[in-house]
Length: 200
Image (tube, rainbow, N blue to C red; front, top):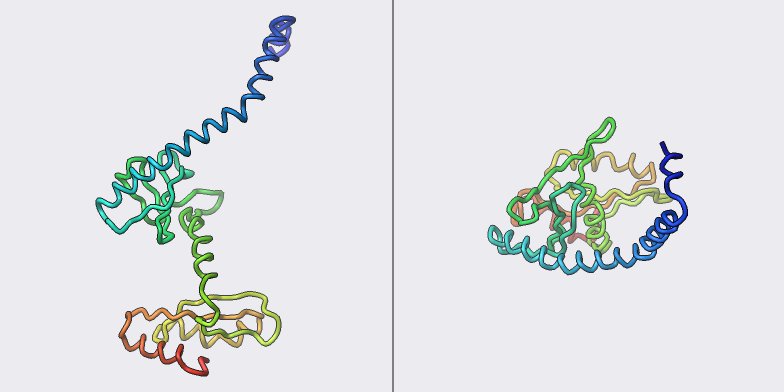
């Protein structure tokens, strides 16, 4: 079948076909640039539409960016607090939570993948003096950041495993997270630990 099609395209027709293909190749970057400009012009309008709709429910929401998501018909919205969620194009529906991508033998949390770099960037901004640090004696092979509450049983168990973690070359860094809130007994204990000369 291929040879039949090729044999029919001869002489003038072949030159015309090659001219059209060459023209498309030359115009392709220009067309892509025009499409990109059109999308960029549309993006602020789309951002405004979605932001206005979301602010009807919560006036505190400020949208930093809107971009197409991997899911047809949904847009990825990044708020000014770093939170990422999905909305429909009109902002009428918002998905805030797990969105799972199906892969061979597993489910992948798409939203968690999107949030990881945001969380890492926020954590990187925390000055080292705000942590209570437990470095290993030798080379640091890894760092484990822990949001801790002194009254949390799991946190206490992790703290009891500090020697094993340090022996593996893991530096453990604590950040205060009193689950009962400011002014609670847990908060008072954490505040005294963070303000002590010997934090450990």
